Length: 220
Length: 220
Image (spheres, each protein chain N blue to C red):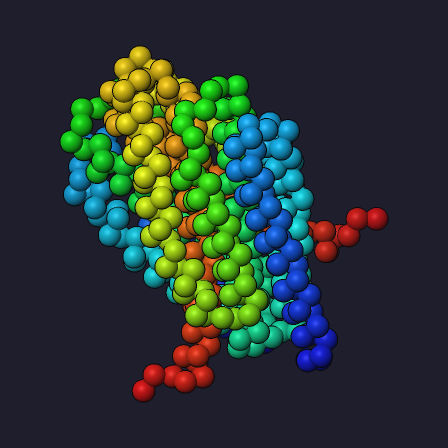
């Protein structure tokens, strides 16, 4: 195997994954921005950009499969590429959830806001941070950073529960708020699911790094 | 490469994936059974079995990585294994959604049923059928069957929309139904998301078979 070429290809793969990650992060932030500003045009932008993201995901998968076929890598390099294949799936699903949020924005755009958005943007920032750091952990093969991402997951659950409980209370008092309340409740759930996918990415990174450590330093 | 051994290993991989698929299907049917019968014990069984499913998924992933390392397969065999890696991720997420449904069952168990469950079990049957057929398409490398699975996705969306619209109408008339209504609405969404994952599996199968066909019979 031509090591120099292979490492050049791996660094290209890293770049492409970070590019995909950046696009996904932008979709999340735009979807929340569209919700806050009730901006249907921006929501539609998120929905339309999904196709580009899907295409880039397929390209990265192809790149991974070609790397496997051409260089037949072993050990950590093999595991890095198979992990990349799993991670792109999560990234693509995250982009789908940003589309889901944007669809809620469109449903809500012609209705008065149920309540000021406080915890929802907080949850969105957490989701973006988790996506960013889990990918950083992947490209740098940093298990410690990956483990710190996993720890945020409880905070995400807590924020989602707070939003959902508050919304159910509002609807209980006035059922006619349901068409405005339920999409907002779903947004909180979509965001929490983004955090779940970021946690999956982080867990895959921990597993990738540690499986390799176990192979190099097997337990007695 | 020892072809005989390799094909024996591939057939083992097929068996394991079908086993995982069977477990996931059982989780879906049990989660809906628990909802219909308001059976908390059964719901807890689904939640507890998730660990076994996660473990089997990791084992299959390991098996795939070992196959890549040991046999360095090419062409359709390489693509079959990388597709297996992506598919197990979807199966594991489907099992998580069955857990989500079971959690809704537990939330609803002490409250009177909002309405008779008609469309929800229908959606559940569709979800199971889609999971089963998408895996059948994978192990038999059958692009035609995979394409027929993709076509069910609209039906799933339609069933979910019907359930959700009906529930929103009930809540609009009486807000105090919200704590019983919203978990049921989420069940419909969880089920539709299972159908999405089955569609993803089916799309991966189409892509796997066709990418190979394109390589063998490149377009002019």
